[in-house]
Structures are given as structure tokens and as C-alpha cells.
Length: 209
Ligand SMILES: [Zn+2]
Image 1 (tube, rainbow, N blue to C red):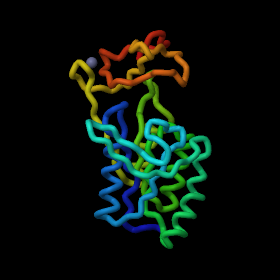
Image 2 (image 1 turned 60 degrees about the vertical axis):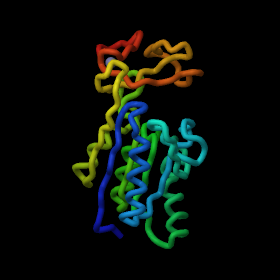
Image 3 (image 1 turned 120 degrees about the vertical axis):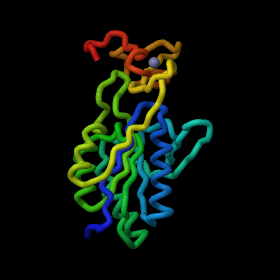
């Protein structure tokens, strides 16, 4: 059964530290408080930034948290089992599904299409580009669904140390130096800074980008 008040897919994209999670939390709260929607909140289990079972925004000085059900990023289709349990508990359909750190979720494009086709609205936040400046997971592909199901894309704005708008997430090693293109997936002591096109540094990159 499809909800006649469908909102489609709301995408929240941007670099590290641009307030994506804060914006996601705000929209979940608005949907719950004003639209009285049941919103299932999930996140990939390998998001270690937020802590277990919660999504956390550290935007600006305040810290905000919201409980989230963890899904296996390699098998996100288990979301249907979670939905079934949640809908039995509520004795009604869930209206919307919110996913944080969507860039880590395998098969996010077909999963999003399946959930939209089954009548669920989606709110998905994530990084558009990885530290190499390349598309991260399926996040950028999801914009295609807006034309088919409605919705919106919000590019969260962050600023570089020089004051220009930042488009890249600069990865720094434990010494604060730019991490090279071929650096390992896990780097102890790594950190990220938003950077503009001019200030973004990527030693050893094979492409001009
Ligand atoms: Zn800059």
C-alpha cells in the first residue's frame, strides 16, 4: 500500500564537517514532530565516528545524538527484516527511512530504488567524494531517483581554511600531513579537513582532478 503523501528521496551531501548529520537529525525531528511520520533511523555498523547504536552530529560546539539501528554495510538488505519487526511493533507501516553515512552502504543504489518502489520515503546523508576526490559509494548516483520519485538534494556548504567554499575532504595523517592517493583504508591517527580546490593536496594522484 502506497502512501499518497510521498516525499520521495531527500539527499544531504557534502564534505566532512559540513553539518550533514546535523541536517539529517533536524529533518528526522521535523518529520516525527510535525508530519507525525514513523522514521526508521539506520546507520552502517562500520561508522565508528558516532558510537554504537547512535548517530552523532558534532557540528559546531553542541553534540546531538539520536538512536539508530545498525545495519551490515555489506548486506544492507537486512533492512527489510528490521522493517518487518518495526512495523509489527508499531502495528503500522513505517513512513520513512533515514540513513546516515550512506557512502559506506554497499548496493545503496538498488536498495534505495527498492525501498522507494515499496512506498518508503528516504532521507540519506553522506559524503559525496572520498579523500581522493572520487565519488564515494553510490551517494552521487542517488540523485537519479529524484526525477523518478520526487525529492531534493541539499549540498551542505563547508569552508576551507582560506575562506573559500570547500568541495573536498582533505585526509591528514597522524603528523597532520596530506595523505597520499594510495594510502591504506585504515590509517591510525587520521583526520579530515574541508578544503577548496586550490588548497586540496593529494600526493601521488594519477589524475589531474
Ligand atoms: Zn582553500
